[in-house]
Length: 221
Ligand SMILES: C[S@@+](CC[C@H](N)C(=O)[O-])C[C@H]1O[C@@H](n2cnc3c(N)ncnc32)[C@H](O)[C@@H]1O
Image 1: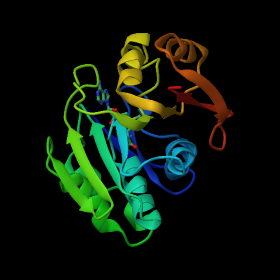
Image 2: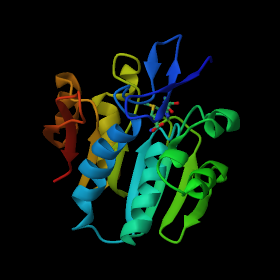
Image 3: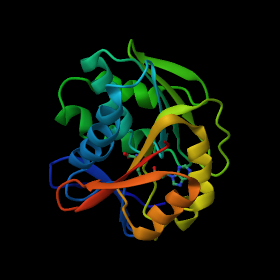
């Protein structure tokens, strides 16, 4: 599949798929979006009440930006995180090497490199506070082996991948969350929220990153 690296408005890269006309992140800022939707609205939201280690699941590892920001957060706050991510179409070494996240965000290039060098299917120690398990599988086939406190739901938009935004998928994710667990996503479409509610979630619309009015935080009460 053809891919292009483009620069978003905050200076950080994202990947553009010309055939489908989609990007991996908001063109208004990849790092800005990831920080807002996943780190601030998810991780920081649950961190004060969470037991450690925090068990975190990501739908769609992609560029590893969310994992990288989470690893940096874990080190900075000295809070242990066990991160599991599924990815059906891993990016190539060359594509990953061309991304500017680590260069842009300071000197933690080794975290970024270690996240991508990590072996698939086994748990890897990326840093004293960040453990990573990458699974090369579809979310639809994935059989969870544990439960989670937080889910970063970072699939391509429902128009592109409607099969990932169904009540059935949200039931699966609801079932792998611990009580009080949270799922965050950038998408706040009403039919997506309806599917989440049908799955059992309590759904909150909260302010989105710049240029996006709303996003969703869904809670398992
Ligand atoms: C919107 S991108 C986000 C990627 C990533 N979170 C990032 O920050 O780069 C969606 C990701 O989901 C992956 N993906 C698509 N379908 C999938 C599936 N059925 N199961 C697991 N991953 C999938 C894509 O390859 C892509 O990496």
